[in-house]
Amino acid sequence: MSDSSPARPAAPVLDVWCELQCPDCHTALDDVRALRARYGDRLEVRLRHFPLEKHKYAFAAAQAAEEAVAQGRGWPYAEAVLDRVAELDRKGEPFLVEVARELGLDAEEFDTALIDGRHILIVDADQAEGKAIGVTGTPTYVIGGERLDGGKSQDGLRERIEEIADRLLAQPRD
Image (cartoon, rainbow, N blue to C red; front, top):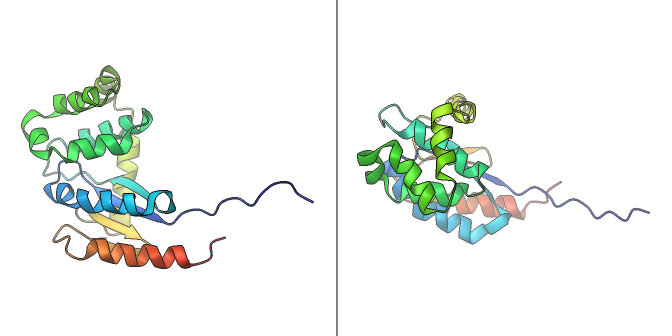
């Protein structure tokens, strides 16, 4: 007889391919917040980086977001930057450190991370994976094997994601 209880099945995953300088990702933020609030830990929402060349600070912002993850505040940081995309456009990399300071994170460590590039491999890996599965712009969502492009319009996407998530949650999981 075993005293161990069965492991909790893994939650379905929603990958959100995002760029923190992207106005469309800023627009999508309300939907992402609503999905995170509705499902809590029943749906794993993962921020995946897809910096676009047309945005000068996107790659640095992705690295900064990874430093926020390392400091335990990934989502709050990403949301704070997305809430102020226009400020990032104007202020550049110093803004990324400013947001970290506002959130009570170690701003000096952010500055160092942006200089030493310690998170570049994570950002590069996300971008390569995104390209491999057909991501061409942001935001793009992947859930249950379906890719949904939010770059042209967010209309109806949250409802579609909810339909897929509900279906996945209703299925028995191993």
